[in-house]
Image 1 (cartoon, rainbow, N blue to C red):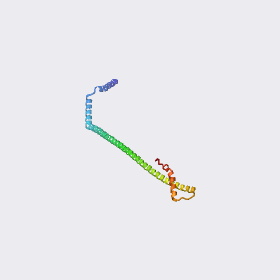
Image 2: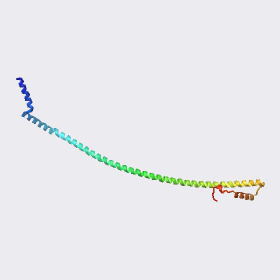
Image 3: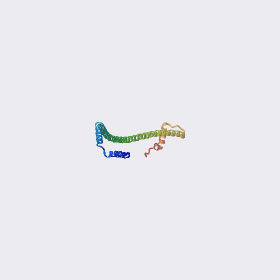
Image 4: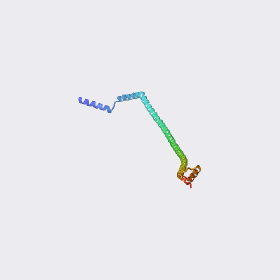
Length: 185
């Protein structure tokens, strides 16, 4: 009999899961409703509040990110505009510097040419003056040499009129224009 009783208990326990008892169902339903009430009263508001806070934080983060993106876009556009202005100013400065350099170069060349011309003219005047002085010295030397040569040849001293006549004759025979560099014929 023991064996039969054990099988019945096993059958009853496996039947318990398949065919529940009405009292157990009521207690289960009652425990579920109490748990639902407690959860709804205490846990649900906290969960809802946490979810609402999380949603607000996410929305604020999205708004902040959109504002930051808009600000960054505005700053980027402002930076690009300033960069364009800076490039334009740099181009203008380079153009002005180039123009000023060209003007300065032209002025310097003109000043150098004028200075060269002045120096050439001064050199020409100096050469001409020195040539005249040298010719005068040569004339004086020729005159002295002529007088000395004549005195040696004639063995007598010449008076002032004879000396002047001899010097003028000797000088008229010499061509001093070639010494001065004049090409006037």
